[in-house]
Image (cartoon, rainbow, N blue to C red):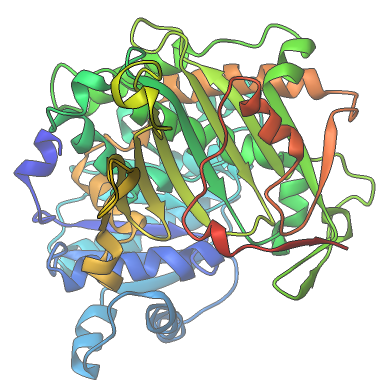
Length: 513
């Protein structure tokens, strides 16, 4: 927990929240429910307002009805009474806006100042762009030219991934944003950094005396990060066919989680010091120097038609808006090295894919085994100790140790210590977007990505993408509902390791179609 998080648990001074793309899926599923949860928990006082912005016409009443429907369907809190809803809903207004014309932003300024007077808001403005990245620059310029940044309070910009398509496009996008906003005003959101157990990695490492001294290459054999999805590309075929697993998941979510595992202890619990350490990890990633190195360390696959739990599943090339001869990867596994003093020689194995058997995000830290030629190791097959951090959908921590088999004469068996946070807290676990919206409003940038993080991640990912250009020889098909190409298993077998089962994996059955 950072110094800023310790200091303030309520947004006492208030703010106006602008949701660009207010009629979109992200706003409906995540943003409106997150704002309501913050309100219900008292983190938002009465001096706030929300302005929804999109092209399509809406009255305020229609917009409030849409917000109510999203909360009823997706929020972890239910609306308790109509009078409570009315008290909350009056803070919401809607404005149809053509983001390409600055006149609409001048009108928005007038509407904003009226709401600031009504709810006693001191000019604080949070702009959330739930829009395509190519629109970020134009919206930022029109916010400036329309007078929206002329305020006595603060102005902050929250933007969603993807932040560019490669390093070159990301640099161009960053230049457009920096022509309007300063770096400390830009909050690049990665919702995985808002998840409870991802943030818990920091506490596990730096608040426990029996982890941090062992958190190095002398005691850890390998680290495995798995992010599996059971769904296909759904309605995102057009976007996904241009991005693929490398750009959609590895450049942001997976590398961000890797930095949380591998970072050094920060000198202070301050956002910039924490992000400094994450950047050092990204700069220490061993770069793949040519196509042969990429081929030796990276496996890419694409799901074909298959069957899972009795249901027929289409292949990726059969999905809507996908090129029927597409070579886009829907699966990626890689062996990554962090070449610094702490981690030299320790492989980090990462894998992510669509149409896999189980939806889960887990980190497995495998510790080095005890010597096999002395004492108990000479008589028994000792399993390695594991620390498993379960991020999603189940949240918790699992530790596996060796112990005496009950009742057996000298037998040894793995024992599990399992802390299930989801079982304890259940549906009341805060959503990632709740934390991140609240952090942005408070000015806490700890769990947002800074530009040098984005640039370093793209520099690593671009080498892989460049090696794949013009060839699909190494694209391996796997049946929908399986755990991906066999080459992903061989990647670990080369080093004497294997993928550890994730939560729920033992129930899987897979059939080629």
